[in-house]
Length: 91
Image 1 (cartoon, rainbow, N blue to C red):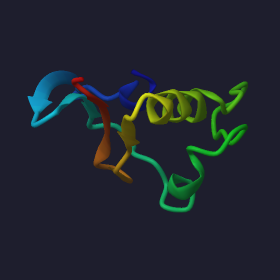
Image 2 (spheres, rainbow, N blue to C red):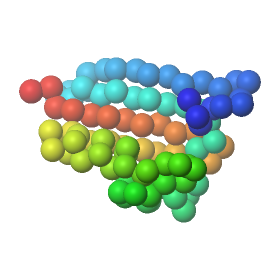
Image 3 (cartoon, rainbow, N blue to C red):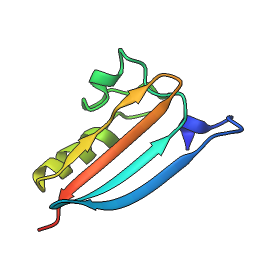
Image 4 (cartoon, rainbow, N blue to C red):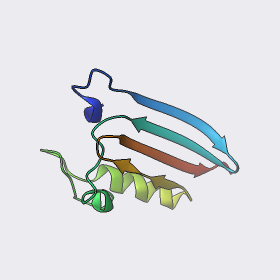
């Protein structure tokens, strides 16, 4: 929601689907996106660009997903938004 704050056309969508042997949840927005220099670092512990942020949310999420055989993908483009895909095995 922070990514689309202040935009009159701001959108956040959530879609769940089965893709082969995986369940995927895709969260997408048309917000500000993630700067190219920050994108490689957003999964690092304690990295944040937000005032007052701790920088553990994505790192913890990715770690837990990997421990359960899942994945977290985070493509983003400045000005075009971000798309988070969370995948977990069905079995």
